[in-house]
Every structure is written in structure tokens, then in C-alpha cells.
Amino acid sequence: MLFIIWIIIGGVLGWLASMVMKTDAEQGMILNIVVGIVGAFLGGWLLSPLFGTGTINSNDFTVSSLLVSFLGAVILLAIVNLLRRGRIR
Image 1 (tube, helix red, strand yellow):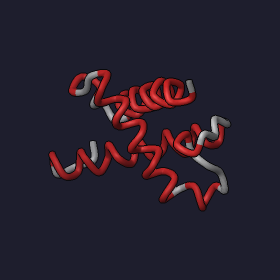
Image 2 (cartoon, helix red, strand yellow; image 1 turned 180 degrees about the vertical axis):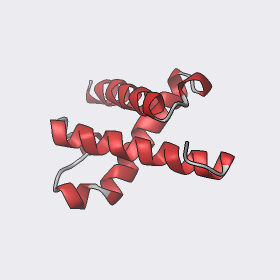
Image 3 (tube, helix red, strand yellow; image 1 turned 60 degrees about the vertical axis):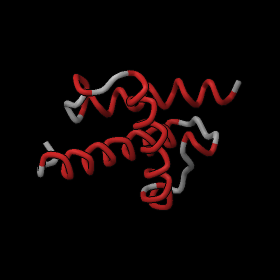
Image 4 (cartoon, helix red, strand yellow; image 1 turned 90 degrees about the vertical axis):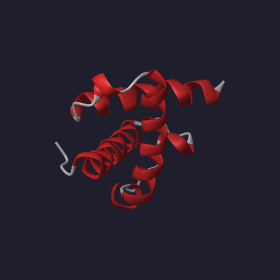
């Protein structure tokens, strides 16, 4: 059951990050889930020590962990945009 919640929250965070980075028209539901989950890993690696919280990948669904996971997804999309287009957007 926790895995399904993890996928749903990851999809929502990936969708929100794609809306912020204006890549929503290029992504589908599956890619939004991947961006949310991989972005949460990236946020856990980069931002979690700064904020002192976990991410959705560590089964921590607090506001601070959702924020760290969301910021990780935004950073991931910025890196992808930089590599694909030569600019962040």
C-alpha cells in the first residue's frame, strides 16, 4: 500500500515540477512519476542534509520532506533542460 502512495505522491510532485519548469506539454503521466521519484532521490542526496529532513523515498510524508522532494524534481528538470537545450528555461 505504501508503494502505491509513493507512486501517487511522486507523480503529483513530478507534475508540479514540470508545471514550474514549463515542460508539462512534453511529459506524460509515466514520465511525471519518474521525475518525481528520481527528483526525490536527488533532493535527498543534495538538499536533505541542508534541511535536516527525509524525502518521500524514505517514507517521510511531512511538509518539509515533500518540499525537498519537489525541489529535487525541479533541479532534475533544470539539469535535463540544460543538457537538452543548452538553457535552464
